[in-house]
Length: 359
Image 1 (cartoon, rainbow, N blue to C red):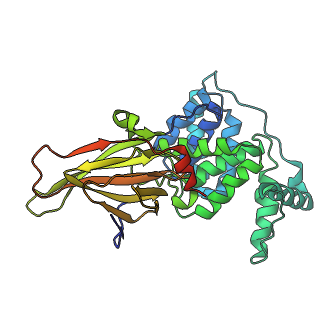
Image 2: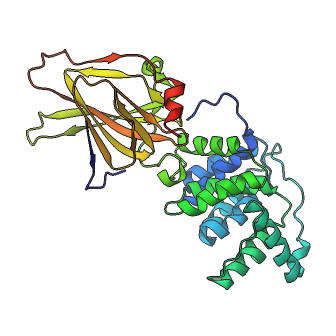
């Protein structure tokens, strides 16, 4: 086996035992993610679905207004414009929600600053945060974002963080902020399981552009459908998407069928052996494990390539706290009779052995 760091850049859901987020929260999250990536075409039907599933008009107004602080005024205003157009249909089943009222702290800068400092402290797990490097930004965060904006009554603090995590998940290059708000979402009243479920939901529905630093699926490779045909050879849920075959020769005769396999956190395949072919894994997102029989497991990260010799017993899958994706293909070894390439599936990787890897 060889692990080779890539020197080139590749054009880079989840079955929960119990759903802990309600439909209203998931529809709010969907609208927030679509607002963030500016997908107005998908946002319009998503807004209608949200209204049809218990999200009030004023909750959507509050969510889109809050998101200007994370995604910018243009996208916030565009989303509000979509909502305005949808409301022209005047569906009597849609709920307006509690009438908007101007927060009292808007007339008291000192009160807004104190409120914001208190909210930010709670968001950070009870530890006050002061951004001394840039005092003006520190003031904006406390007085405006966590003061003026969080003073609104249309959304709870827990729901505000669901909206924020969903929006940040849809953006590229904001991994530190996303990680902070995933923790903050728990501090503001959600459970870790709810936050994990939210990230899985966003990934499954093509709404996430998270990278491996956030322990979520990177969004550029499709997740695919549940891997039902091979489910009996996996612990946990995996997903399969057939990728356009890789052409290795100018004569177009050396073509490798390729699949993208996605593993949910903790998912791994059984020990197995490839007969008549080498297997090549190209890791594209998340964090994973690879292990050969009798050897220590090796951590995998995006950009690693694993060249697995024919006949070697091995397994691979996700780490316990991260989704994982790899491309997989097989290269026929010389002198293999046509049709003799085969996988030999063996025993599962036990929980005891797998859990030991995280210690």
